[in-house]
Structures are given as structure tokens and as C-alpha cells.
Length: 200
Image (tube, rainbow, N blue to C red; front, side, top):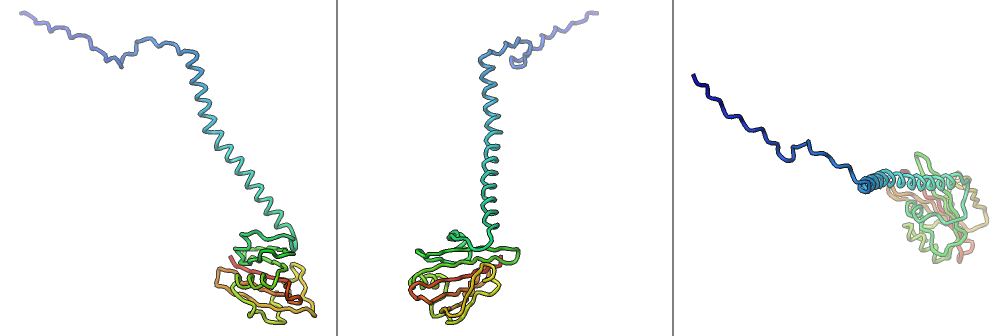
């Protein structure tokens, strides 16, 4: 009986990409240094830039906090103009050219108040009243609208013998209301005392 032998199957060929027996050449020193340098640069960029940004932000935040802390630690009127933002928030439009400007701000969880005093001209007073939403005709002679409590906080006094007039500007919430008292003893240079109160 004859046994037919099957032809031996040819050895399995590997695709070129599957061959792992090819010896790996050592990496060129220059190429290795360039690769390491590039890796180091990428790490510095990925870590250094955000870290630098955080340091700068923290510094700016700290400076801002210190400025606010210094301002809040001041008790009584500061001989300076309130910032434009404060004037807008509290709607106290100090007229340009005003002199003797001073302000003080108080704030708690219930109410915030801005106390402002300044001397202006007759025209400046009219502009201030108009921008505040009122007019000279609303000023009541002999009326002092700033409360004793508010006057005590900033050391204001309203003695007899001077020509006082006052009005209160009431606005819809959340806008502030403003008590305005004016010394018109010298009509050409009225002295204004204003307390603007807002409830956040």
C-alpha cells in the first residue's frame, strides 16, 4: 500500500513589519540629546506657564485684598474722591471741579452706605441734583435729611445759624436712596453732604 506524502508546506513568511529579529541600532547621541531637550522644554511649558500664572494671580489678588483691607480699616472720612465705580453704584455724581471732597463707606450683610461731602458752585449743585434724579426745587429750607446716627459715624455737624436745605432721593430697589443736605449759607459755593444707602 502506497502512502502519499503531502508536500511539505513552505515555512510561514512574516510580513516585513512583523519581523523583530532585526537588530536595533543604538540611538545617535545628538538625537538623544535633542529628544531629551525637547521633552524638558515641553515639561517646562506645561508646568511652568500655569504655575507662573497662579503666582501672578495670587500676587494681584493679595494686593487687591490689602488695598481693600487698608480702605476698610480707615475710620472716618477720607480726603479723596470715591472711585468712579463707587460713585456709579451708589449714584452719587460728584460734579467735576468740586473741592474739599471726602468720603467714607460702610458695609455689612444688610446695607451698604457711602458718605460723601464736597463744595461746588451753584451750577455744580444744579448738575449734581439733576444727575441724582432731583432738582433744586426739591430742597426744603431748614430740613436736614442726614440722620443723627449717620452724622455721628463720620463726624458731621449741622449747627444752627447756617442756611440748611435738604431732600431725599428715593429710587426703586435695588437702586440706592440718597439723603442730601446742602449748606447754602454761601449760595455761590454750596457745601453738599450726601448719604447713599443700598441694600444688596
